[in-house]
Image (cartoon, rainbow, N blue to C red; front, side, top):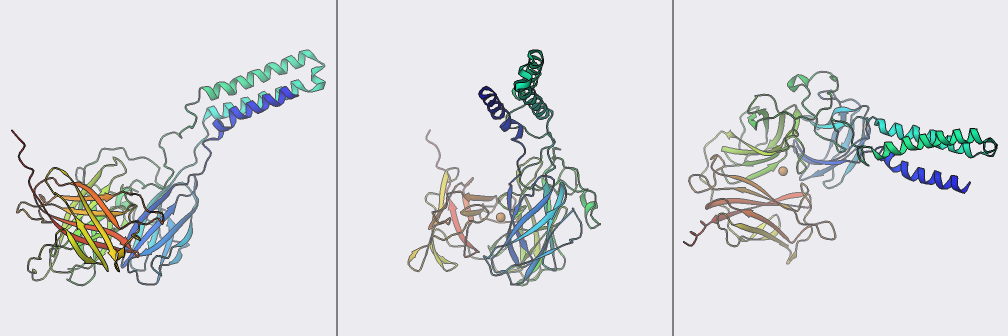
Length: 477
Ligand SMILES: [Cu+2]
């Protein structure tokens, strides 16, 4: 009987991990920033299990969000929210969790409505993975082998040698089949057959373009990975009425493909947003915002332009199909008398921003050479060490290079746009500071406009800096 136990133990050890490794629940978590109306919301979405189920969503209000509530629901693409759940969005910095429910695999949207605008965040619920044939071979072979082995070793059978021998042979065949199946399995952690759903919610492919929007819940989109070659994204900006300086206005962005003209609706979340939008005004201002998707390829964000004039818009995106990062440029006008040209922002040195003393250092800014841009934050005579993670990192540096006139001009395509990250690790408390730094190579000589951005007390602090980049010295002959 001891031999039997050893055999069974060995068999279990051999089969268990290989046969059941794939039957785990996805635990993907995705964060996304939504600038919905007057509110800045950070959503943390936990992927439901394969085939659908409970989908917890945490809503964290940031910025100067007015009190009140937003309403969340999980719907099929374009569907009207049912069983919507109200979520308080006050006070700022206080997260609230709700549990939404998806009842099947495929394309879904999380709707977030503030009474005026309904954001639709695409998520994909993974389909249950079918059990591969080799796993069934292992299970059946092992079952037959073990049953035959136990029977062959039973005392009543051992008294009949021919029957015991026959059962022993059956056991040998069963275990051989199981062992062969394990040995020839594709890998120790089998991957589901293509198309491969990711564990984390991923962005759904277009649900029939604009046709999928506005109707009752359409049929679920088959889960496919977009593999077609696509052109770059064209962003077209518009406002429903002429914007006024000093008044909030909703800026709409429509995304189309430069090579096909089709609606682009395959954006993937990168750095916690579908679109990172930099809006640069004629007064040297920067708004770094995250428009909400309200329909396939259609995004909306509320802005309050400070002055009349022409605004440059830079939309950073990644498409799910090719994964490439790209920036689409567009513009909009705020009617009215053009203001006098704004004075450039201060250069490196100490300045007061957001209740802090910020010391910006940019030693030796030479074209074509790696340069370190750093900002050291202080307040009340001490160091600031409670800067908060924003968009997955310690700090952001937005860059606008010189145009043909030698100074930064958001309307000049020669004025290059850059977005640099501080990826350093947080301190013991999970926060950052006092020093934030960026490595960047300025491509050419001329005047650059920089904006250092960090988060403190759930608000974004933007530090404008002017940097004059000198030409690289001529190399020695
Ligand atoms: Cu952003």
